[in-house]
Amino acid sequence: MQSDGGRTLLTGWFSFVDGEATAGDVLALDRVRQVLDEGGEPYDVAWSPRFEPRGLSLERARPADYTRLVFVCGPVHGPLPAGLHERFAHCHRIAVGVSVIDRDDPAVAGFHRVLARDGAGGEPLRDLSLRAPRGTPVPVVGVLLTQGQREYGDRRMHGAVAETVTRWLAGARCAPVVLESRLDRGDGLLCGTSDQFLSVVGRLDALVTDRLHGLVLGLRTGVPPIAVDPVAGGAKVTAQARACRWPALVPADLLDERRLDVWLTWCLNRGGTVARRRKVELGTAPDPADGLLDTLRTGGPEDVCNAVNG
Image (cartoon, rainbow, N blue to C red; front, side):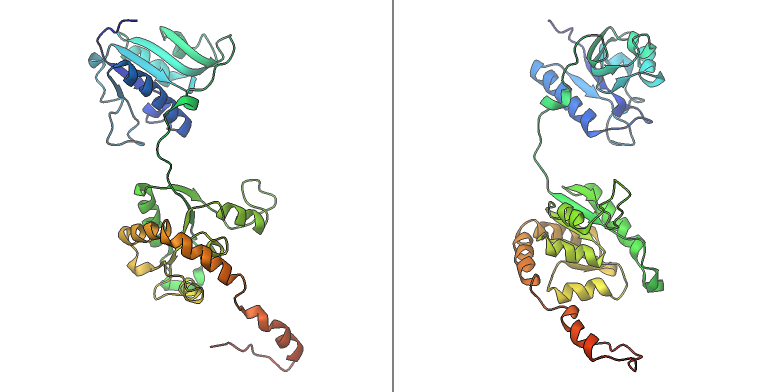
């Protein structure tokens, strides 16, 4: 088919301020972009400013600049897609890779062509995301933070730590996975056993955490952690990093994005080897339970105070 020489505006739920950009929708968009690129067809993408503030927004897209509009992926229903037909009434409008819920919905009826994936009466077709071009894989980094630990009083810097870490992650070249170490056998979205949690941690490339057990369980599974001590002056995270001879430790008052960048680079390179070696060493290292039996057998009711080892 001969091109009309005009320009196409690519839209979808990722274009609406009140919509959302899902991984599947954006991959479907990438598949459509691939097809247009190969066909030499010029286009722009309309993005929600909440997702891509620097991109072209639907509000700023001038209808007169386009002869065609394509709506990509997702269900076609409701007033948001229907509004495109009014604003871009002069454009040839196509929906591709979409689900049709109600053929009589104005959102559906307003398109000149609907290349549906399902709901159009025929056999369902495969989703566009399956053939989207694949980018370069990125490291998977677990994120285990706490807002608790009130016992540290005015030395707590947990909020500032969480803010810095999450801001850094937004620009870091990695895929963040938010972890929760609290176990709950009645909540299907949480791990119910410690073995389940260790299985999750063990599949990561690195971990950033302000929790003692984030540091320890990362090392136990051979995954290099970036440990941030959220207590001013240092507390149990610092002590445990010292006990485990783990160098990737950042005090809360020195935390910044540059240090996190440096340690992530180290963790994804030499740090992985160090963590795997430390995993083996720590598996047989002494711990306080080694002396428990002797203490139980020699202690008596007259021992009213616990001895604290220096």
